[in-house]
Length: 514
Image (cartoon, rainbow, N blue to C red; front, side):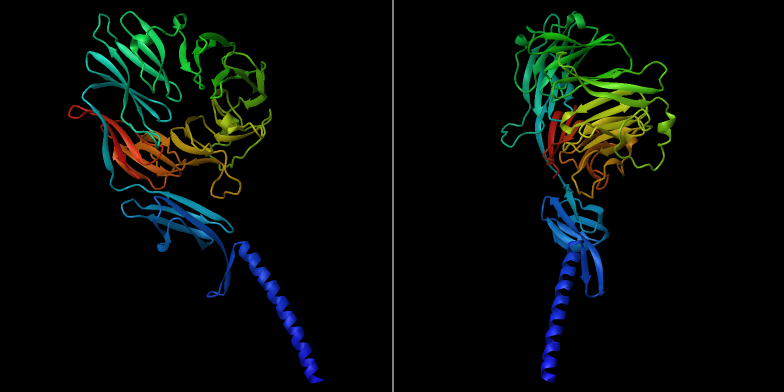
């Protein structure tokens, strides 16, 4: 009888223990998935996250709080907290950053390493005089005007060469014999946004003519001068490129006119009737007007946004009404406070939008509009129809990032980054405006994104630097004194410089920095 009771008790105990083991295992799996780990040494349960470190070049050593964790690329589990991450490789500057590890999340960091010593290569050299140079806004095309006293030579250099490009030296695209009765007194270029076209202006003592030329292939001057732009009656107009590069824009105090380069036709886009109206174009071939619709004695400014084709046809009202407070006391209440801006809907009662519109940029590829007023700056998301404050002061756009998620701005003399989009679930990115640390804005002359959208290149206090997006890892490249022009290529492998001196003449140099 006792034996049967013992066997029965053993069976029950085994069942209970098995059930307990199953539930315990399930609980441990649940805790593991939720970012918890059991520390047997401390007899404790801790929340953890994952640190993933990548680098370019790869196979760099990873140190977390001074402890070696292996080589890139690698992921490692860490307790929740803040850690100093150092990435090191022989022949390169160390990369350092304090990184927050968040529970249940993988925190990626990517280290872009700069060589401590550069390989130098002379790309081009000339004893001629450098009269002028031009570069497009994306630093893809460099145009140089050389003068030997008798002739003018216009050279084109492709800064960001393709993988299959065999010849990376500058190409003479235009040569002009200036040893004539009426020599050229001034030659100027106005590059198109992409830099692949240019308005060529030729001025002599008696003439002032403009032509459109390609910048990436050879042209004959004798052929170019036979087809000047037929715009002599618009000499008092300001001439600029439409962003789609198929039209030119002529603006006077009274109207805005487009000129179709292919069809040689002119179109009236806008007759100016209100000083508060503002216009712009975009890369997709559209013309936009923010029209002031404010009624007399109204305290709230009312605008509408209209879209046209660049020939003036196809009117579409994109935003029927957008309201801005005329009383600057509203925006003053946000300045200097810790107010966390988020997306909002616009209405006559909304106090965040303030001031008269002075400038705007339509970015269809980013589904948004950058709006600057006399008092503040905003981003409009055309998908959601909502707005967010970029800056409580007017802010100028320096450059949109190549990945289309960010924009580099300057507000009140300070450079900042505004992030208007991020991947869902990415805890390392916060939408809004962020300062750039370790940057003396008063001394910065040129600042642009690197092609990976995580780093900047800039000149400060006679040095060329690279730093990451928040200003960390500020690394010196070269002393900038005596350098006429410089840029880091889109491959991020090379630094290109243009210099001119009596001893060496004009020199285009490539430094391998990565």
